[in-house]
Image 1: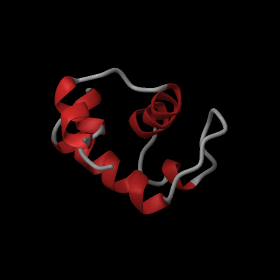
Image 2 (image 1 turned 90 degrees about the vertical axis):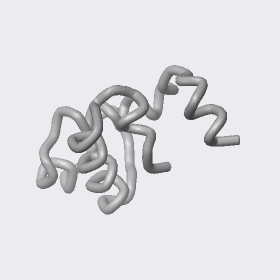
Image 3 (image 1 turned 135 degrees about the vertical axis):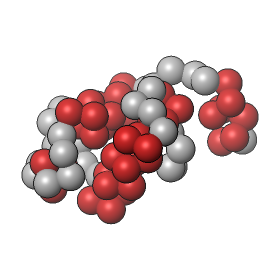
Image 4 (image 1 turned 30 degrees about the vertical axis):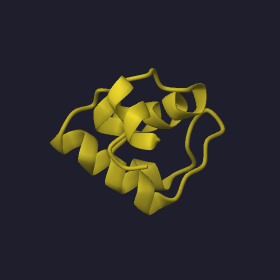
Length: 67
């Protein structure tokens, strides 16, 4: 099911967008501080998504590779 949604390229949901903004605008050290937009996420998850978005793309699919 998740693969089908990934391949359909649906838009980011509001909470996904708020986390994505933090990931794109901050460096790894900045992700250790409280996130903007009242978001919380595990630090390891944020770092992995940050890495994947740098390696592949900061587009929606690059931010969604790890779920």
